[in-house]
Length: 485
Image (cartoon, rainbow, N blue to C red):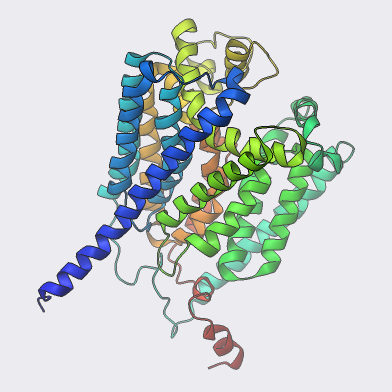
C-alpha cells in the first residue's frame, strides 16, 4: 500500500532528527575538545605534545577538520547492525574527532596538516562506508538482532555454546593460577591505588615478562579476550556469575599490570550494554553521548578543582582528558613532526617486516623514540593510534590511507564471518580490543589485542538463534522456561 503524504513526512522526520542530533553532538564534542586544549592540555601538558594554539597559523586547518566531522556525523548510520559500523563509531569518537580538532591546533605546519587532514578523512571514509556497501544482505529472520524462534529449541547450538563457555572457564582458571604463581610477589594493593608509581611498576613488569616467552601475549589475551567475553556474555544473557568472573579477572590483570584503561573499559562496557545496546540495534548517538558526557564531566570537575594533577581525583581527571581524549589526536601531529626529521620507518617497527624485508632504524621502540624526540625523555613512551604508527610514521599520508584500507578489509571480512552470528555479543566482547586501536598499531590489535580469537568466537556463535540473548527484551521468557510452557 502506498503511504499517505503525512506518514511519509513523519518517516522522513524520524530519519532527519537522529542525524541532526548527531551533528549537534559532534559540534559540542569539538567545542569541548577546543576548550580542553586551551584551558587545560596546553597549560599543563604542553611539553608532551600540546603547544599553545596559534589561531593565525592553524585556523584554516581547524575549520577544515571540523567540517569533515560535521560531514561524517550526518553520513554515518543512525543504527548499528554490523560489526564494521561499530568499529567505525568507536574510531569516530575516540580518534577521528580528536585528530580533526587537536592535531590542527598543534600548529605543525599548515600545508602538511591540510594534506594530513584529507588523508585521515579518506582513510576514515573507506573504513566507514566500503564495508556497508559490500555487506551481505540479511534475511528478516537473521539471528543478529532478530527475535529468536521460540517454538524451536536449537539444542545443537546450546550444547556448542555450553562447551565453549566451559572451555573458556577452564582457560580462565588455568591462566589465573599461572599469573598468580608468576607475578604473585609483584602484585600489591598499592598497584591499584598508588598512581605515582605506575610507570615504575610498568618498567619492572616489562623486565619480568621479557624473561618468559609469550607471557606478554598471555596477559593481554587474558584481559582482552577471556575476561571481556565472559563479561559480554553475562551482560547480554543476564548471567551475573559470568560478569563477576570477568570482573575478578580484570582486577587480577590490573593488580599485575596497573593498566589505567582497565577500570575505564569495564565501566564503558557496562554503560554500552545498558544504555547504548537497544532491542534490535546499537545506537551510535548514545555512544557519542556517553563519550561526550565523560569529557564534559571531566571538564566540570577540572573547573571546580582547578587544572591540577595532584591527588587521586586530579590524576583521574588528567588521565581522562589528556590520555583518553587529547592524546589520540595529539600523537598524529607529533608523529608527523617526528618523520619530518627522521624519515619514514616503512613498517620496519613491525617485527615481521623487520625480519623479512628491512631493518628497523632505531635501537629503542618507536614510541620511546618519539617520546625522546618530543619530551627529551626516554621514560615517556608515546604510544599512539594505528593512524600514527602504521600510517604517518610508516609512510606519511599515503600510509594513513593504506592502513585505512587494511582495516577496511579486516572489518569487511568480519562482517562476512558474522553474517549469521550474534553481532551484538561480538561488538561488546571485542570492545577492549577495538579500543586498543586508540593507542597501538593495527598489527598489535591483531596479535596482542586478540582479534583472531574474536573471529573464533564469531564462528562459534554462527547460525545462532540464541534465546537467552533476547531475554532482556522478553522478560517473560524466563518464566516460560521455568514452567515448561
